[in-house]
Length: 225
Length: 225
DNA sequence: ATGTGTGAACTGATTCACAGCC
DNA sequence: GGCTGTGAATCAGTTCACACAT
Image 1 (cartoon, rainbow over the protein chains, first blue to last red):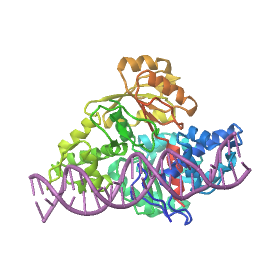
Image 2: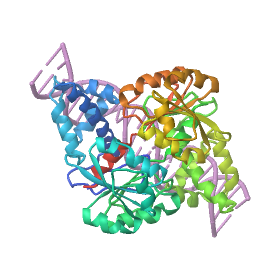
Image 3: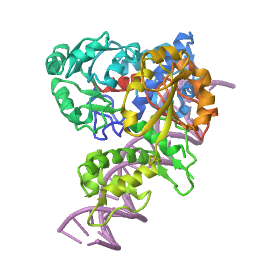
Image 4: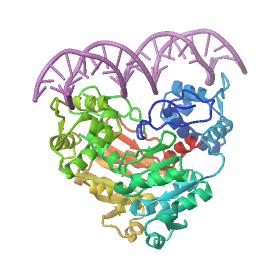
């Protein structure tokens, strides 16, 4: 089981119980896998058949050795003297990330940011399906007119369990974030993309990925003199 | 000068030429400073006067030793046997992050995500002022009714230079992100919060902080079996 | 010749553990 | 007694450099 080391924006203690064979893979490497996948997709579109570690690394903004090492965690995919087969590599990463088939996701919190994300096409484009949204005042959110069914927050457990959803996007005020996270977890969610400005406390087998927009901006402001 | 090591989501090569005296501070430590500040704000509201490293660390989701070391990079703020003065510490972090006074920010790209972020109150609440937004079709964005002036993308240089803006939020399609980043940089911007799904290539003295929403979700999907 | 795969060396960051101060 | 500040020890992650395959 498991992956070691922390990912900056997520709870340092959040580990995953991954399918047994993978051991000792830095979370950062997994993170980079997604980036490689993006770059590979572009190459596929361009009809390129193979790519060298240096070319792909450059596109992804990392060093060639790093790319090779990252891929090597999962097996041997390249041909010495030639490079990596673009199509095959892309598909293997998708497989690894559990992205071969559509993943259902729920969104909790239909405020400004929440309904913004509902309208945002980026998730759908990358193959995630937001199957439901929840809010304390579902009517208000519905009024903003989005193609995702909005339910009362009370139906949260019921619907998540019914659909077997494992991923949630949480964008509620900090004050209620923890209690909603608890409810999500006990309904069976094991991955939370958290936009609330709080450090969530969750069981070991749940992974939280924090995206704190204001904090990102604040962080930048340190560097601009 | 300067800060070493990388911050996960930003360009690994992006370093800052910081005011000389600070040397050898991990970027991650600076990142955590923002988190500590959040927690301190809550304590201020509660009227608490002092806080121990273990209490604050717990709230921030880190180990006490880490918190102490992080703060020690910048000076000695605590009292042995007592803890840290909440108010003073908060203000010193603000000062350090360059957040004592309001920072003007521009937003580029008024698509789904862009106009969502314009409506999002989080930035304003944390003391950033979005002074202008730019889009190729400013009228369309204006129509969505937001309290921020929207200009044609052509006026970008002009207005950024006039206002001396140093921070930008970039949320345009990947295909045009690099060229807009170039224009921002030459107009004087030195910190970019990048929501576009591309690795931006910028000069050494510009800091890019990448927030790739689809990628965050994808990353989670690895962990949910 | 070219370019992967990988142990070994290195660099950076976290944690320990304790000395020193209130 | 409690809690900070910090050198030393540990741990994780990156990069090097080269053996090996095509």
